[in-house]
Image 1 (spheres, helix red, strand yellow):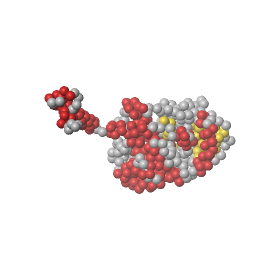
Image 2 (tube, rainbow, N blue to C red):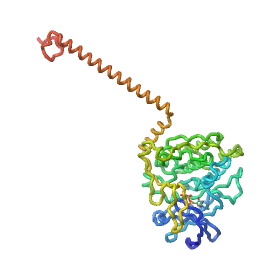
Image 3 (cartoon, protein in one colour):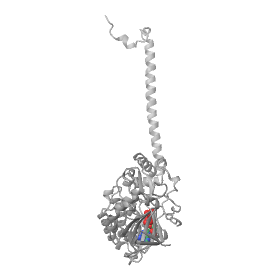
Image 4 (cartoon, rainbow, N blue to C red):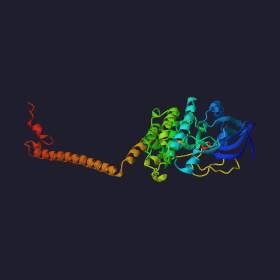
Length: 419
Ligand SMILES: Nc1ncnc2c1ncn2[C@@H]1O[C@H](COP(=O)(O)OP(=O)(O)OP(=O)(O)O)[C@@H](O)[C@H]1O
């Protein structure tokens, strides 16, 4: 069923769904396009419509072969739509779901492409803020890159910004996808370009290992790991590639590589990675959600949907266009309560305790017990000594010559008497 979007575009078929809207295959004056129709509740939000109009110039002027171009932005009655370049292919999430992990050379090549796109965006002052496999499209119509890797393009620029909470709410809420959130976002800082580098390095890790470094279990646990834990190594990964990942997952944003450096460093690695098979990385044994909660994480157990966002979900998405059945089952943008500094500190303390091996924890408890016992023994000895001294004093006072003078201490009897 064809549908008109503004005066210039017609859409006929749904090609995908996300948390912010539905993507349609469409037709414009210059040929085929992809049209992302934002959800009705977002389209009805006047603040968001204002931002949409404001962002139009920045988003439509971002023109780079590794970025999915935004051709137009349409505000038409109740429709709010981004008209994009149509990419013939698939997205990286679908590829991961199909193949699991990716050979190291292909992974590095795909991520170098995305880093090129990010470098262009960052140079134009645009931070993506939601880099994840869903937002990387593989252009299967283009000639493949090194080792037959498909060419990648980053999409969904600006959408996280459009649906973001205003500054005053940002102090208490986070919008993003938990597995890819940089620690400084969780700590409440303004997201800058380095958050995209952190997210992209997380995607690289995921391509190589088949899972994200800090994901799994309850959202509170995921946030805590981003802030407090070191990235788990990937067995068998060549050192050069590992160093790049570790640098880009640094907790301090200033220590991370810039996007252009990341692309260049990855390309330097490509020859050495040629022919390496997919790494056999054992899946991390993260326990299912509730079992994994530490007491502090249990305090931080809220994952809820702010207006305009979806719950973190495993079920189908809310239908976005009347009459169209939901088909998205992905975890995607989530609005989260930002953990307080106290909660983060508790996560850190518990995390340190959890990292200690069970044998070491047992030894540590036993040493604490012995210390407590020693302190008690010293206290008891002091009490007994004082009691003995008091008893001796009483006995001495009772035998002294002026014992009958009552409460006056015996020493007084030796003091010079008043004339
Ligand atoms: N320009 C495009 N060309 C071709 N297909 C596209 C294009 N943009 C998006 N798609 C397809 O539509 C799907 C949904 O895209 P969308 O950006 O709405 O959601 P998402 O990125 O999966 O999730 P979210 O918006 O919640 O981050 C994509 O995964 C992709 O398969």
